[in-house]
Length: 340
Image (cartoon, rainbow, N blue to C red; front, side):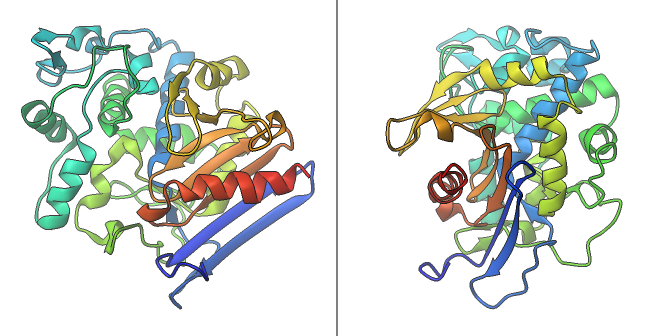
């Protein structure tokens, strides 16, 4: 933060019972208010919450990962959803492909975010966003043929959760994850309020010079793709419950981790499961003892688990410019220190 004044606020939690480590840090780069208990957005880290909700429904017998999504979505959502090179593949998309980002669908988030940033009065619902995508964007591949990261997949998963539960996605999130596991300060930004509001104002969420969290209507656009907002301590409650198999069974979690596909990245390759990133090991640079898994947010956010030291590593630089640097920081400055 001393080297780069773009970082307005940064947060880091490193916790390991077996190593006796419990580090919680919040720093301000411009003198603005910052507190370790401040609610923060971790952007697409919220996708892991969505994937976990889907896994809960799977364990309840209310869906299967291999189900075709048309079994749960309205006809108007499905109509012309995936037309690639003149053929309609809409009915062939599965829940698993949405989770793994292999549906071949387009990404509506960034085009719509740009429209909202240019016109603060612009509003759009999730189903309207999907309709907009059909009209303005094109799929990139047949379902199951290519990994293409897109929030559209997770919008659809959110609608599937709503279809099964018969209630809004944010209510299901509170009922199945936030409330049972003590996340009393957590909420879905733009949709719900925490059961126990924090005395600290939420930290900003920057894309360039724009604080995404203050653009009217903007937080709601990410929906099931990343609208979770909570302090570090609540994110830790979620991760500890997930890794100790109190939310879903061990075999289900292992499927989420290991049923994966390769995804490229500028500095290191990743395998992508059900919203779970796993950096591939590289001799010397990233040896097997540093193997970890977790989820990443485009604003320099990360929430990872390092099995070797049973450590939870959660944080954010709260700036789009740090989307790649944050991962490097976590691996080189945190995990490398833990495994010494």
